[in-house]
Amino acid sequence: MAEAAELGTTAPSFEEHALAAVSPRMLLPQMLTGGVAPLVAYELCRRGGLSDPTSLAVSAVPPALAIMGEWAWRRRLNVIGIIVLTGILIGLAAVGFLNGNELLLKMRESVVTGMFGVISLATLALPMRPAMFHVGKALASAGDREKGREFASLWELPQARHTFVMLTLVWGLGLLIEAGVRAVLALELSTGRFLASAPVVGWITIGCLLAWTFSYTRRSRQRAEAEAEAAQAAEPAQAV
Image (cartoon, rainbow, N blue to C red):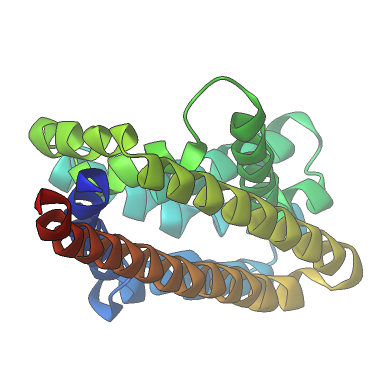
């Protein structure tokens, strides 16, 4: 029961950090550089006479510059930045080595998120800590070793381990579904319509996953606090 009490006092810090990470102040720049700017860049390139694959490759420049700017300012890459950067590299490889394969250019981000979904589910079957534990540690520590050690200590708590398993399961499945939906859109829509709709699919998916995550972590914290209170109330009776 002491473990439950400790989890109850530790969980809010992670929850508060997660809420701060998806605040409008944090999300608006990402929406502009990751959604609006690529679409504008693509449309300008197409109107300028560039081919569809080349225009798609150029549309990756705004998020790439945003990632480079964060690295120059903070000297670190966050988890989301790594995923986006990997998608950009896949898109550029499609132009340089695969004769500008348009479908792969469209799917560059979904390939990465789909792979992360598969890896997340794989960590549940392998003798290792769930993927969302490592993601949570990266978000919570933000490069601070002391915060990283504090977060890592959560793994000693049984209820925390169960929480990370559930988070990894739901996020893994959610990202796989998102990748599947984007694949269908890539096959059925023109490039312009795809660039306009695909980010919305991603935002809705991430929004739903975050909403569930916050709700689930709050319920876990409340259960831990209730168990701690019950343990404290039982102690006098046991002493008698």
